[in-house]
Image (tube, rainbow, N blue to C red; front, side, top):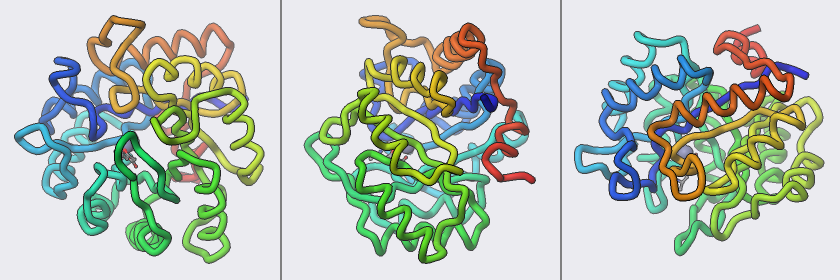
Amino acid sequence: MEKLIITAALVGAEVTRQQTPYLPLSPREIADEAVKVRVAGASIVHLHMRDRFGNPSQDKALFAEVISHIQTETDLIIQVSTGGAVGMSAEERVAPVTLAPEMASLSTGSVNFGDNVFSNPLPMIREFARACQVHHVKPEIEIFEGGMIQNALTLLKQGLLHAPLHFNFVLGVPGGLPATAKNLLFLLDLIPSASTWTISGIGRHQLSMNTLGIILGGHVRTGFEDNIYYRKGVLAEGNAPFVSRLVNLAQTLDRSVATPLEARKLLGILP
Ligand code: KMH
Ligand code: ZN
């Protein structure tokens, strides 16, 4: 099996300091967290930013600041979010892609998101995919529902995405596809065989979905964006403990963990 790529989604857009005091918010705090997850064994950081009030923000200057810290202090692959938070405009959401990070998330369809709708009409997806092409950014295709794979394949046919595709299955969002083994196997049947894939499980499903990813030869995403509890009732004291647990689990299951350089090669970012 190929080496395991661990992504740490450090912040997200929805979690608050009221829910966990360990959530990094400022660019400096997020960069410190990135250093810790790199030491623990992550090779990608998925980034959202917050303004000085702790609210989600796609402000390019905030992304530029954190990216500069992370690039100076680590060799991590930086993946910016184009999902942002529900209700943001397309212009806001795509802004960090213009900084030409190595990767960006790209959701290829709309989904209910708790009481809200995470809206991704096809023209917006095309615009984001074009921005990725212009700035030479590798998209990670975020899949919350089966139909989103169909849209990604349409974009592939239209030349707006390029094979091999890289997917992240985000299972367990309230209103989206539930986090079950059966659903993961169903999604895996729909993607082109040469694709790479990562699995994220929301809340208490994070660890079980990650374990399936390790066993099935995929890659894994952990972090506060998806879950704040290390175990039932016990808050994780940072993102790094999640990463360390996955490294131990991978070792137990006889799967080696990729360095950022190895991850770049596995994802086709480097030849
Ligand atoms: N915050 C969610 C509404 C992404 O980063 O690309 C969307 C999200 C997906 O987090
Ligand atoms: Zn995200």
